[in-house]
Length: 281
Image 1: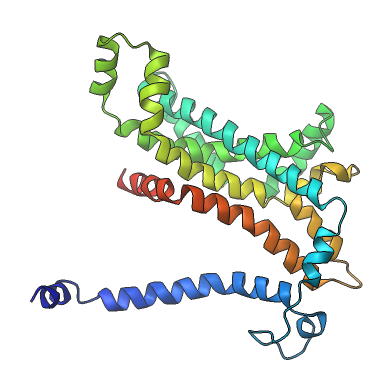
Image 2: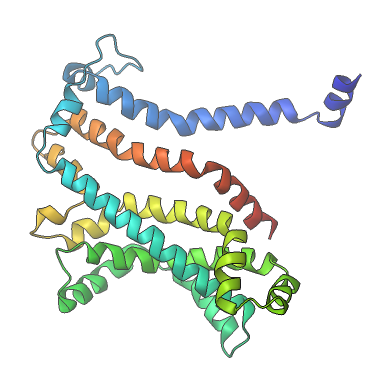
């Protein structure tokens, strides 16, 4: 009887589940093909009749990737850039979101609108001005030239998203904390910060992905000192115009994807609650 009622109440559930499964397959197929190509022999990759399987998997592509002397350094550089972007953007966005939510000041609405407008500007349109800015500041060929722009581009979205989480915290809770003798700093870090942590995790995921996969800034700002390059630049080692090593490209791309998947698995619970809170707001 309960099963019958559930079917009556949700007549469209099988169709929704089927649609979700099809979407998941479509989204996951490029990742599957990338990993498959990384294990395929060169002859199968260059075959005119590609097959969605391989009967002779080979780790040769991964051997070539890890055989590159500077690949480990590229990995550490990417990890450093992404880590700095995540930490800095999360802290700055938290403080800024608290300021525009809890305080009343002139041009507050204008500032919030500017955050939205900043997200509409394409990154490509600002790459050349940023190049001249980094050149005049003497920051070309340094990791700082990758960290600072990524923080700037991550902040508008992070501030706007965290604003909803800060706004959802009742002001009565803040007043009660002050009555109990808590200072503003103590309320900020010991009470408000844990409450908006799911939102911070959600914004950190997007900041991490954008910084980890950044190719445009790495290609534009790291010109001569290859020791400051990141993992996306390592793909160019295998993608030669005259003789591209597609197996190496796919193997390097697979290695690049692993840290993103690990980071997502570690924060998935807080990410779901954070995105749910953002939609609810």
